[in-house]
Length: 131
Image: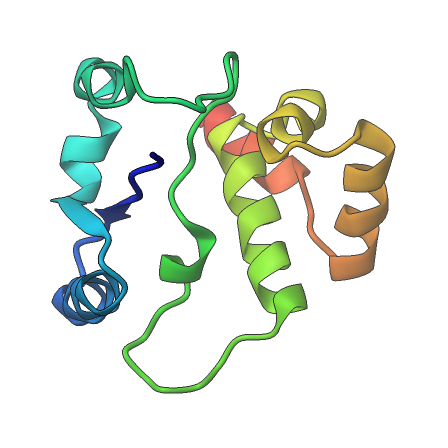
């Protein structure tokens, strides 16, 4: 028997309430973590240990849908969500596109193509690291 669990990582109470309602209406258990709690790697290890499936070697990044969330009801396009996820990964890895691609689960060439497509400047993340 597969038990489903929804793990919510957000500081936005509106997002948390909507996700809890979704989980309850679908018979799914729910755990809520603030972004600060989720950032604590040891608690994340305790949370995921013993649960399957967990992809080994993958870095868990915050859900990209919360990054640009303003509380409005506007639906973001897949391209907008993808662009935000790519920018977050590039910033997380200080402009290292190889590591960002691994974290996103895409090939390096694909990431380079999408960086160009969305007009993302990885050098900005490198400059932040140097500062």
